Amino acid sequence: MLDVNIRLRVIVLFSLYCIPLLAQRSVEVQFSTKVSQQILQRTVRELVLIGNRMGGTNSGDQAVRMISTRFKEYGLSVEILESPERLTYTHHQWKLKVESPKRLRGLIQNEWLAGFSPSVSETVCELKYIRPGALTLDSVRNRAVLINVPLTHELYEELSNAGIRCILHYSVVNSEAYMHGAMITQLTPSQSNKVPVYNISRFAGERLRQELEYGTPITLRYSSKTVIRYGNSKTVIATLKGKSSQYYIVCAHGDSDSGGPGADDNASGVAGILEVARILSAMVRMKLIQPPVYTLRFIIWGTEYVSASDFVKKRDYELDQIRGVINVDQIGIGRPRYCVYFEGNDVPFNEHLLRVFNSIGEEYAGKQGFWKEATTIPFQGGTDSHVFLPQYLRQLRVRQREIPVITVFTAAWNEPKAVAQTKGWGSKAWKGAADTVIIGYSPYYHSSLDIPRLTTDREPHIVWGVKAVGIGLLRLAWDNTEISK
Ligand SMILES: [Zn+2]
Image (tube, rainbow, N blue to C red):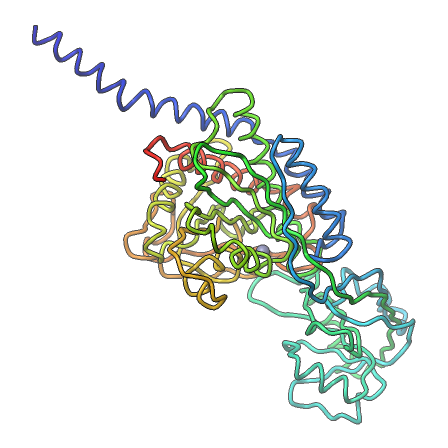
């Protein structure tokens, strides 16, 4: 009799704990096998071909149409949220070449016009290098100048007022970034900026500087055609309805942020969200899973920060319905680690959300088709998720709530950064020291070379980002715990 009792207990325990767990894992495997690297790569290429997708421009509107069409094809209901008018810019074309000496004619490659540069007709003029603090205004009048210090608003104004014709700018950082591509900068938004700024590679910039310091006279030929006007950036919101009106936001910024090609930052995030939406909606339609318990809102922000800020102000009345925000920014590449990061473990009310992602990170690390490393990290600032934090809501004069909010990424800036890990948040999937996390970077961050060929076309990260977010949602939004009304 005792034997039968034990057997019965084992069966009951197995049914209670193991069968749901096995079913959950099997659903996660089904999701993961449906993630298509080809579709993701194609979407990133299509987005980059549209242009820099800045909110309120024709390029931004075209991206909105493409994204909306996709969501509708997946059977989701779509609404567009328009933000108030802001100044925007479009670069129709530009040209920048060394005119003389002839041997330097091919030197400038992959240059990029800075945002809010004005239009200028084709001009030939002499180039001068200026050291910070060594500016003698007479010597630069009617000349182009080469600089490698941060171009502040004050410096730009000072140079413009000194009568210079254009600026060549290059950046130097603690990694290989910008050696062959330009770090893209933006001028203060204005319709009355006087001179164009061309961002050039470190390789070209250093060579020009050396030649000028050696005494070589250099002349440039350049032109620019841009439009600076007011426009409304548009945010796409696609809904997969759940049983509860409480919802998760799964979002990414749709503009390229720097104004460059933005394959990693953030066409990768947009393509990732579309892929998660495609697979989850198909799995519901095919009855492989039930509709979610909690509604999912897939959101592509028209303009980073601006659109999320506008959303929380306009939707103040329903922010209590948000169970969590999962933001995806830069999942197209990552150096030197092959790691997926989940940001926000220093915020106490993120505990539940991030424990889920930390477990996923640990369980799948090293498995075929998954990340090599994964870890949670403290907030670093600088993307849409921050808009939902109490301190930001306070700035926006929106009633403060404790909305769990995280960002998923594989690279952050243009060089690696070591940060102290938050106590109690070590990950078994992190191979480095337990108390320090090295945050991965992109060698193409905000660069003219943030293009598909160098990022998503040859790196596996985007697939990992999609799997992490999809599995996370399957555990969170399909949670069977009682719905709190
Ligand atoms: Zn970004």
